[in-house]
Image (cartoon, rainbow, N blue to C red; front, side, top):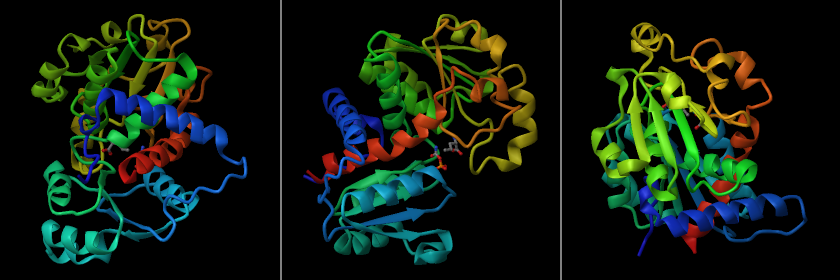
Length: 300
Ligand code: CP
Ligand code: NVA
């Protein structure tokens, strides 16, 4: 059966743990001279309908390091920009390529691609979820603090963002508690919160969410596709910036994560993202290692 990775929920908790541990092993082995051959004569097709720095580079580099080659299609490059359907595209691409990586807006485009593809489809970000980011984030937590079970994580900012909604899935799967501090108008999808049960709480007071946290996470206040809402969002998120005063409410040894790109002076203060509690650079690098482990898992 073809396995896809559209949300973290496509994995069992045990599989998720295995991928994270494999990512850590692959990272340690990097540069050790061992040649990986999983993707020998295999091709990854990346279809990106939105911009990317980290996701594109990490997937293309992962592909090279696994011995394969990649084809990258930006919005204007394929016939999808002229209305060819996702389902026809999936049939064609998957008849030639071995793995498809899709970044798009509506999440149903990702599910449609998977439904019509014979090969694994990876969600490289949709409006609803960014599961690849969570692989790297969980790996980063393991490296700094160990297993996540019973850890306390705070997400401050846009609770409806793809990154926050993936954190909710992660909380239920890895059994840590996620405390979301978000304005009332920017809450996550209620079904996700319900599904996470006691592992997820919501408040509109960021200081309550952050209290005693082992990890504080935020994301941009206006994601890709939300540019026209920027002014109203800047107003709505007033008071939700992660600055050193907010970090002071977390555990003394708390770490800070951000998927990047970051907007200093908006969702995060420079003193935090560039300060000693920030692990964002390792977090970004881990996109490479975690996705190598994911590709191995999907093609195994
Ligand atoms: N974090 C992340 O997905 O970054 P890019 O948008 O640069 O890929
Ligand atoms: N929530 C952000 C994540 C960027 C990696 C966005 O969708 O733009």
